[in-house]
Length: 117
Image 1: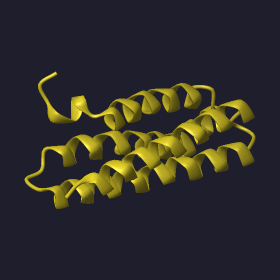
Image 2 (image 1 turned 180 degrees about the vertical axis):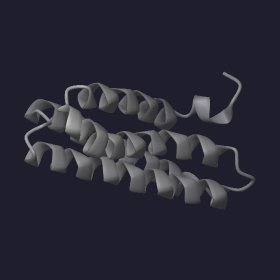
Image 3 (image 1 turned 90 degrees about the horizontal axis):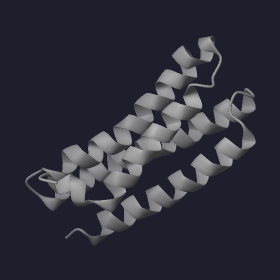
Image 4 (image 1 turned 90 degrees about the vertical axis):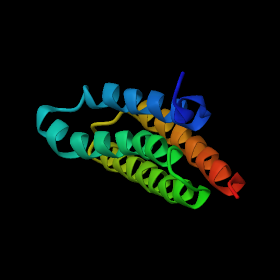
């Protein structure tokens, strides 16, 4: 592992969650894969991408800014979960599982952000 972000637990967790989101989206009806599914996947991918991009910045302030973007994207995923559940295209167990994991991830990203000086 040669990049700084690869050592970060939040990055590894976000990467795993982006994969889990893609598995849930595969079960969407075709019309929702290209509407809600695309938006949800982009948001899930954005979480992990912003952690990686921010970790290579020149300052803690820059990294904090990208961690804030990651949190916002994670909240977007959570909102997509609600929309999917309301539209009856996300199973209750998938909703609960991903909701809880994103809740924990957001807390971890916030803790990392708050630890930076």
